[in-house]
Image (cartoon, rainbow, N blue to C red; front, side, top):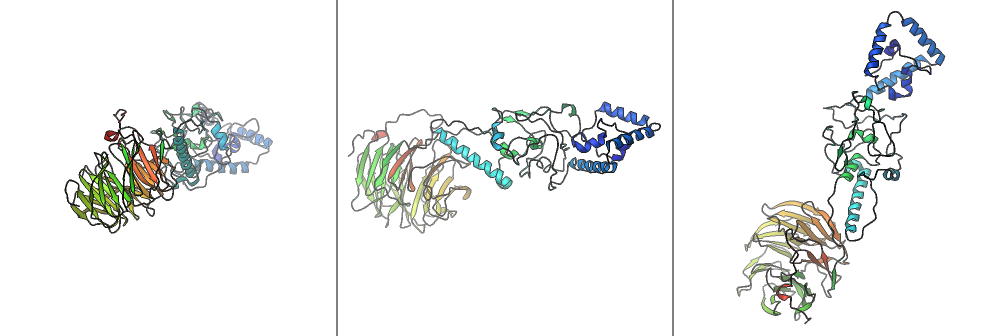
Length: 605
């Protein structure tokens, strides 16, 4: 309540030993002004005031004037100062104060920490060991999990630094309310530690503001020790609970007590640091095997690596096709073309047949188990850069802008011709469950074809560069992921049931290949200019699980093992690198596959 100096003078307040009244003492220490006397003392003063109104007023006035005279104080100056302090206290107690008013500097007899001029290192070091906000650096553990911890720490530090420098200009994952009992929304952009506690309080349901001179106890800090004013817990306006609420992740601090926090960061950053994070799974950043692949073409539009169901890797090198057995690590040369080069290879989904596309527009089918060519099919007038199987249907895409459907059981060269792209077809993928084909071209178009129809079901024009990377999700029906070239750099997710875009993410570099994990809802992508990295993403959040580097050229080729746990990448640096990036499928046991029907290869022919 506002104080009236006339009422104080009439009330005859007692004089201190130093010769000044309590009203004068309030000028020097404003902390006592906001604290009303206890109820018993208040009643005693009111009773004494009513009893002495008539007879003893002159004598008390004379005594008070003599005491003030001995103290040598100017009454007019004291009254003016009292008026100023009284008005200031009334303004500070207003719950719906203007959030844009310049904060008033507080000079009291207690230290109230602020971010300005604070030793951040000392503040961190003085936090208790059990406090989740303590950013202690632990000795890095040995193993590959240390890489994940380091990257996670770097990302957290970068986010925290941007939040502190730019405040609310970047999104922060902070809860809307701090505690159920306060009901105050989190301040998205506090001006400073002093104003954030009262400036952003909604005026609809105003709560009594905290008197600036009542310093609450600061929990879990050993830098200063404050005594909680338990005797004032019943006073209106006191907002410090007698006990700080606790949660399983640490103290549940109220935003109104943020001005007394010893943390060098704002409350939103503290919430980010306190937020529990899932432990990242260990992904080795070092390939477990590296093979030389001489004459592996550095051509974005080719598809020269594929991993078959028999656990055999097929690679096109120059004019030859080699096969590497993943079980025995033996290499076999399948064939060498005469006056021609290999531009694409593709294994049939189940079996030991492999299709080979050539630079002259031919498509050959080989029996890898018997090392015998079965047939050669024509139709294209330019190189065949992409192949895709759907049971007995083999689809080929060429630089001549055409797509041919071929039934390998029939003697015909092709059964259906698709003319939808205006430039080279560089990506083909079948969705065997729905019978849909996705094709990408150098004309920046992504087309979805239903079955063997020669009219596209969808023409998707979201990319602004060549679309080679295409992958159908094995976990969600109609979900198609596609990646754009250097000018696009995005991974776009499409709903082919509705023809709509679900989500997109900018990868920062050319997207060369995309493949979905068979065992988890994750996706792996390989990239070219300018970072040449391999990235594993968590879908649908599209957060990076791990980023793998090692290739010195564009990572143009990608294939996945039959069990879905290993990927192989190829680049223009003429190397093949094998990475363990995915785990086993939940509910499956460790299998020791003997390599299928091709496991008996033991010599290099």
